[in-house]
Structure formats: C-alpha cells, structure tokens
Image 1 (cartoon, rainbow, N blue to C red):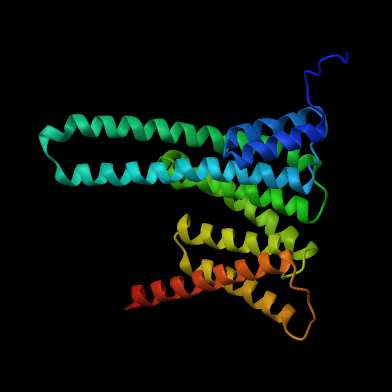
Image 2 (image 1 turned 135 degrees about the vertical axis):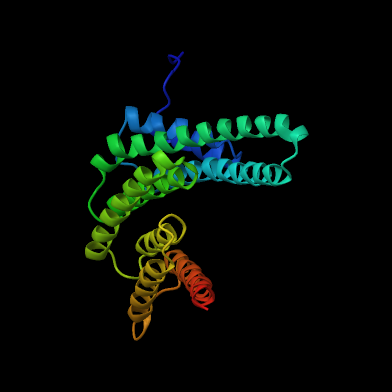
Length: 253
C-alpha cells in the first residue's frame, strides 16, 4: 500500500483550487495557491495566478459591497438624528468596524504576499505589471474606507504601485495588451475615486484608449480570447471617459 500523502503535489493543489473556485469557496482557493507558493514555486502559472487573483477579488468585493451598505445605513441613521436611534447607531458602527477589519486583513494579506514572494519572483514584462497592478488595486481598496490618518498613506502607496506598473507596461507591453489596458482602467479609477481628479483620470484613460485604437487601425489581428478581453476593457474605458467628461462639464457650469 502506498504511503498516505499529507501534502498534495502542485497539480493536485491546482485541481483543488479550481474546484474551490467552482464552489465559490474563495478562501480555500487562496489556501491552495499559498501551498503552491510555499512548497513549490512563487513563480505561478497563468492558471494559478488567475485563480488567486479572482479569489481575492471576490472576497474583497463582497466585503466592500457590505461596507458600502452599512455606511449608507449609518448615514441614514445619523440623518434621522433621533435619540431613540442612538443604540442602533452604536450597533451599526460596531458592525462597520468589524467589516473594515476583515477587509483590511484581506488587503494586507495579498499585499504582503505580493511584496514578499510574488513580485520578487515575477518575470519582467506582463507578470511584473500584473502583480504591481494588483498591489495598486489593494492599496486603493484600503484607501477607499480608511480613516483620515491612514487614507493618505494608503493612497500614496497605491499611487506608487500604479506608477511603477504603468512605467513598466509602457516599455514592455503593446498598447492593446489586456494587462496594460486593465492597468490603465484601474489607474484612472484611482485618480477619479481616490485622488478626486477626473481631469487626470480622463487624461490617462484617453491616452490608453487612443494608443490602443491606433494600434488596431491598419493592422491584422485574430479575434481570440485575448483580443476579446482587450475590446471589453476598451469599452469600459470609453464608458468611464463619457461619464467623467459629463461630470466635469456639469461641475464647470
């Protein structure tokens, strides 16, 4: 009889992570990919990297959406300003603090993983851009809900990560590459939502959009999954540009 294997091999970890993703057990996905990083190699395959990224995105999206709901309820409760509601307000704030702590822990967990293992092992080019973008994303999430004393610090860390990623993307990736476009999309959202600068957001988004369109014109391309991903992001950039332009026009009137 073969001895019982306590630690799954890399292929088994990937299978278990994929299975956990199908079951929407995203914490289990993270656990399996962390086993791969610790026991095998911090240089993840595209499938492993994708599973990790999707898992953290789903975990944080649920928490961010929950935080927004609680924050809206709290503001509504304050607006009512009734003495009888003070007890409820205390309960609301306690729940908000709990969600904030969970969200902070998750964001700091992925940033730590990026800084200590994934970024040092990343190959130059798309992989390094992808991980630097992730770092910018999760510091942006921290800046979204942090209290004043931490908000500016997280915003500066997010900006530094995005700048590093974008500089590397401009020199290593084609304008139509989905990772470069996804970075431009998220970086422009940072300028709009965190820095409150729709002008900078529009400038960055328009530059990325125009460069990508220029690379399409007069060239032959295959409509594969990569191209479909790029076109989807271009549509999102275009939508944001329209929305932010209308916003700037309204503010100037």
